[in-house]
Length: 337
Ligand code: NAD
Ligand code: DAU
Image (cartoon, rainbow, N blue to C red):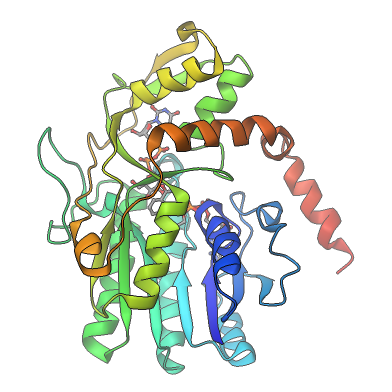
């Protein structure tokens, strides 16, 4: 049995990972450590909560006593660090919590993992650490890091620290850098769910700048299959880019969402640009394809349809979030425990 500490497993990508991997593998025991910030939601994990190979702990990765206690109690030998403050716009409004969680929190996990001689530490990172591309070219693992937002600079710091633990202490660390994810359970502050929900509510769709910023979209399950592969087979000290070769300008995605939902383009409203807005991200994923045999299995047309359908069918999930009811749900759920 692999005894794995998964952090941030109540968020979008982490919960999809846990729900997916517990169906795939019966030799994993997962301890999910999550602070349940505004972005963490235990409703995402309903299908996993009674699995005997899973347990949830509410707590902060910056709490070194708690992390040490969990390593001892559960005899943790593997770490997958999804936990982060993840939203660029929030990092622009206030950066402190980003450096606290993403940098200090990762340091606490690395130091504890070092003491306990873990067999793998997988740091989940992002293509945003590379900065912004012009019209041409792709990010490879050799592209210089040039992060532009408080969020991406905190992630770059965490990447460098994780790799330093490999070089200095020989810790078996790998880093993944993925492009923009979409799919079920994504918090409605991010582009795709925000636009779906606003369109369903006949509210304005706020487009930053000229709408021509480009992102490279990947379905969350494809990301998590790559995470699993790097976790199982990735080399220590190595970085793996993950992307599905699906670049799109924001405005094209927004128009597609409106078209699928049968809503008018008059809902589109151009607003003030995001400060320091990166123009274009695009991933070269040939290393993980050639070395580990990964390939994305979902195409955008099918997976965006499925994602929109999911938000239509799970209205209660996002209504509770946008009305603030999730906080009430949480205190009812835990007040007696
Ligand atoms: P998310 O914001 O949906 O989830 C983050 C989770 O981390 C939440 O459950 C939150 O409660 C938890 N968390 C935050 N601070 C914590 C702390 N101090 N201690 C314990 N738990 C804490 O984020 P996401 O979109 O699922 O992203 C997950 C990871 O993947 C992040 O590291 C992010 O940088 C990375 N990533 C995201 C994308 C994307 O497109 N969303 C792409 C590439 C990489
Ligand atoms: O590239 C990976 C990154 O993708 C992850 O590391 C981050 O955690 C994740 O949040 C995401 O960052 P982005 O800033 O690219 O995602 P976001 O959904 O916030 O924005 C996508 C694009 O849409 C970006 O160009 C800004 C634009 N946008 C976003 C919002 C929320 C708008 O035009 N209007 C909006 O209201």
